[in-house]
Amino acid sequence: MWAGAPAGETLQASPLWKLLHSFCMNGTHVHALRMVSRTGVSAPHGHSRMIVAVATHAESSPRVLAATAQFWSDMAVTRGGFAATGALLSALWEFVRDSTPERLRQRYGDADYDWDHHVNTTSAAVGWRDRLLGVFHSPYQPTEPTLFREMLDSLRDLARIRFEEFTFLDLGSGKGRTLLMASDYPFRRIVGVELLPALHTIAQENLQAYKSESQNCFALEAICADATEFPFPDEPLVIYLFNPFPEPGLRRVIAQLESSLRAAPRPLYVLYHNPILQYVLSDSPALEKIGGTHQYSIYRGV
Ligand SMILES: C[S@@+](CC[C@H](N)C(=O)[O-])C[C@H]1O[C@@H](n2cnc3c(N)ncnc32)[C@H](O)[C@@H]1O
Image (tube, rainbow, N blue to C red; front, side):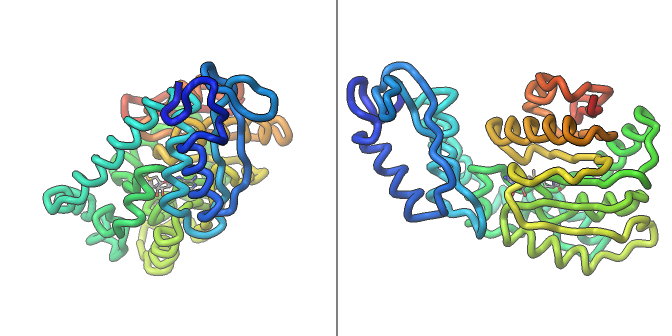
C-alpha cells in the first residue's frame, strides 16, 4: 500500500498523485509516466492495482520539486509508499545535518587535490540547491586520488589492456576530478557526463585550468546531460561509476550497455567505485566480475 491512496480510491483522485503530477507538470518537461502494477490500489488504464513512477527529462537544471517527486515515486514502485515517504524524510533530514558548519569543515577534507593542482573539485564548495538535488540523484563527492590510481593500476594488471586503445567514460563526472586524474594515463580520449549544470560548468573550468607534467591524454570533454540516457560511444570503453544513480537509473544504464554491446561487440570494462549496488551489475549476463576489493569492483564486458 502506498501513502495517500487507500484501496478502492482511483490513483488519479488521490492527493499524493495530484501533488506529484502538479510538481512535474509545473517543473521539468514530463517525459513519461510509467505505470507499474502493485497490490492494493485501483488505477487507470484498466489495471486494477497500480502505482505511478514519473520520469522527467533533464534538458536544463533539474528542479528540486520534480526531483523530489521522482525520488519518491521510484522508491514507491519497489518499496511501497510508506517506505518511500520515510526514505524521503530521512534524506531531507540528512541534508539538514549535512548543512551544519561541522559537516562543511569535514567536506573540506577532500581539498588537498585542489591545492596541488589549482582546481576546484572539493565537495565543500557546492551550493545548497545542488546539494539538495544531490540528495535525490546522488550527492557530489570526488574520488580520492590514491584509490583512483589503485583502481586503474589494478585494471591494467588484471586485464592487460593498452589504455591507448580505450576511451575513459565517467558517468556522473561532477566537477571533473576523475577526468583530470585519468589524463595521467594515455587514454585515447576522456569523456565525463554530469547532470547538474553548475557542477558541469566547474568541470569545464577545471579542464581549462589543469596543468600537470604527468598528463598523457589531452582529448578531454565534459558533457552536461542525464547519463542514464547517454548513448554509449561505439568504441572500446573503460566506464567509471562512483555511485552516480539510484538503483532504477543504474538498471537502465546497464540495460543500455547490454544492447550497446550486442549491437557493437567491443572490449569494455567497468570500474565501479564504492559498489553498493553491485548486484545490479552481477545480474547482467553482459558483465563478468574480474577483480576488486571492498572499495571497488572491476567488470569485463562479455
Ligand atoms: C559521487 S559523485 C562522483 C563524481 C565523480 N565521478 C568523481 O568520482 O569524482 C556522483 C555524481 O553523479 C552525478 N549524477 C547523479 N545523477 C546523474 C545523472 N542521471 N546523470 C549524470 N550525472 C548524474 C551527481 O550530480 C554527482 O556529481
